[in-house]
Length: 303
Image (cartoon, rainbow, N blue to C red; front, side, top):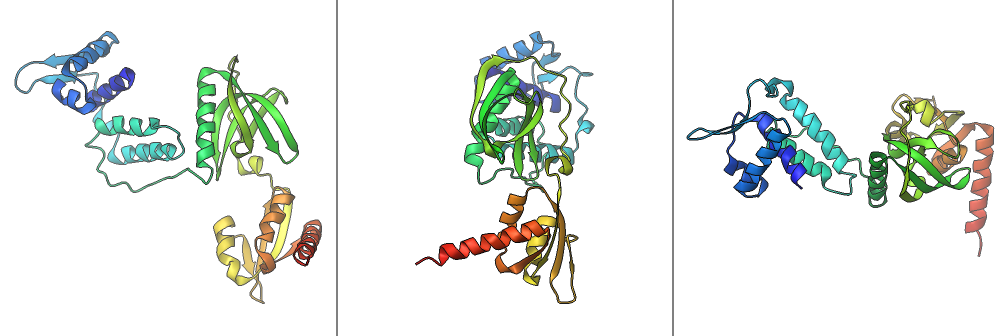
């Protein structure tokens, strides 16, 4: 697209002292005449570009309007590229890859190719997540209402929202917006959304507060858990809750304490440990696990 090429040319001119039209034409794989038209378009847009003929000549931005090269260090550029690369890992298009190419094209002296940080935000749900994220992005940009079917612990419902932010928190993606059903701002988990559609119904942008992304807000710890784990489960506790979530008893077992959000999710998590965990509190959770274990025994005890 022409606009992408214009941005790419401008990026190169901001970082280089001088470049020739043939060099730009070769980089963007277009004719020299096309580059000349692009330079003319940039000039009409108010960018002060100069062209110099003869040996050592070329195209440059007028002195005084150049971006200070000390503004971005090599490390700055590496962090920017790492961020763009992480977004590309969940994108359904090559937008972020193309954006990285534009930045790298004009900043080769800042990018040494020795990336030290790689971030992959994709998940097992990448195939289903990418189209949802793309639809939500379009809806936010176009200021169109977003409709979807939502699966919540309390039941299913059809929702209509004014989307404002796409949020990544811990291991999950959310959309934050004004819910017409609740008449308030709400956060919806993308993996629980189905039939996500950008409608043709426009909305006026509200005065939107920043979403509260604190762990206490998204994962309110209203269940106090106490449990004893066998020593060989230490690696899982450390991985999922950190090394300070337990203490070792005299018998060598791991006394685990934590605040948990949802009793169903808690029980599901505890059952993955099988006989390697004993719940102490809450009593209700202990009783539910016992009943679940008895029910499982009846299922597998059938002939």
